[in-house]
Amino acid sequence: MPSHILLLPDVKGLRDDTCRAELQNQMSLDHRKTDSPGQFFEMTTGISCGFYSKNEIRLEGGIDWREGHDHDVETPTDALQGHVLAQFFDIDERNWGLSAGIHSFGIHSGVNDYNIAYVMAQHQGGTYRFGLGGYTGNTRLLVNDLGAADSQGVMAGAWKKVDSGDFALEIQTGGNRIGYIFVGGRRIVAQRTFLSIGYGKANNSKLMRDGVLFNLGFVF
Image 1 (spheres, rainbow, N blue to C red):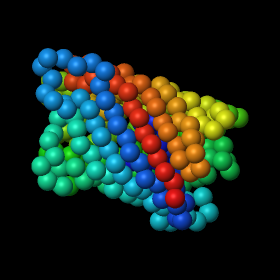
Image 2: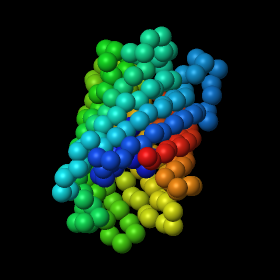
Image 3: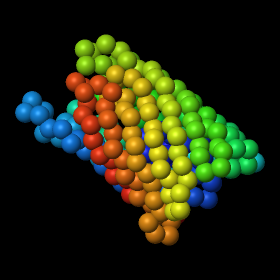
Image 4: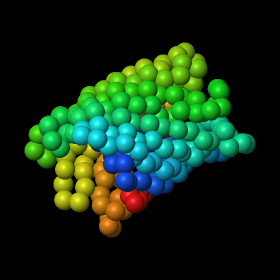
């Protein structure tokens, strides 16, 4: 998972002397008789590290073990995914920032190769940040409930800095499995440890379910 608060990639990458380990669970609150076991949950564990920092440019990358939703993990290639993020400007220095990258990059064709490329820009004013971006991914896996390709969308968000954390409203358009509206926040719960909690409403209730996201992360 690239640097993030809830769902959307951030514009700040990790420094080249910093890593982050995360455990994230996204689970459905709406279970139906036709659902297969485990179909509407997703568990992800991952590690990300910065590997380049110079001036206002940072590069980070990592790997995730991701399972759930509509595929069973039979081999490691079903669950392993990669991600990279490039930060081009420091939002704390300029009050605006820009990042680009790719996440959910899978190596098992047709199973987990969502290969979502994105660009995100954010502006900061006082304790508020506002962001706008876009994404595009694999047309075979990012589809709507009718099976038609729905692999592109807009990302937008608003974040407010509070003591020891952030409030967040994040929107990702699309009638696919990653199209959601999330509201929630992140809080520093201990030294170099954070907890994010959010509620997500699916854009396409025929394909996905509303759910709760929990993310526990450690920076080292």
